Length: 321
Image 1 (cartoon, rainbow, N blue to C red):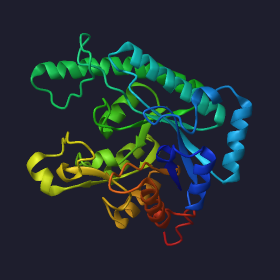
Image 2: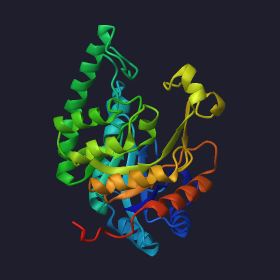
Image 3: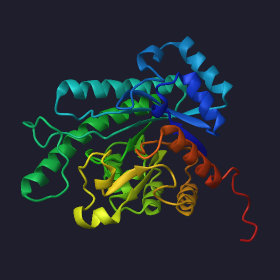
Image 4: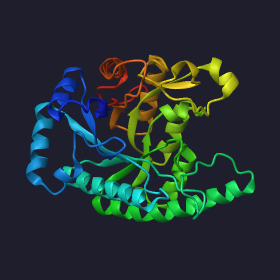
């Protein structure tokens, strides 16, 4: 496994400057935003799509810093009830897959999207309980839309031999491992997870158990290294479905944290070991969203910890067996 970084927090720098900095702190791979919420500061999708000269320059720049691209990122909502917004997200995702194919990148990270609760709805509707019954009916409606869309998108991914790595995220239809497996089973093997533990911690999901579950189905296409701290004092009285702003830190029951500030080094050793058990050997792509520290400090401390816990060699023969 290599230590990687989603470069969005460094968007104020040129890609060359960002790669030079990341190379200097011990990073091996980068995940580049090319649309949607991550933006496209380091990879303007339309400028690179179909342009062999621009793509060659990008590869030369990566080679100069001995780096590779773990994934292209375009997180948006292709199931949005507003047709214009859904069409834009769909175009971004399809073009990201095409660009990944052209660049020799094997994964695109994204969200599952979230529809409204009915044809009449105008706002995406995250269903978290089956009662009253109209919520169960709305959830069934959403899955029908999702399977129809993602079945077609999965064929597009297969045609380009690019994995689609869906981040299990709240306020999206797929937000936990079983939903991820359901969508994969209803589409094809190109649909899998961008395994981001940060959204699973606060839901009370065991990270290593979830890795084992998805790994049994070869369903982990990419991995986001991102930590979360649950603050029990707040959670005991308000729970973890927290709508307080992320920047209102004292009031929140959980916060995204830099690697090691939500869970210690022993935990991350277990995460890396479990990933190896299920055969994952891609990047651990750090996504910095810690409001208590700067991007540079958060990235540097995260890279330092991960470089201590990742394995640098392949397993040898089990001579003791």
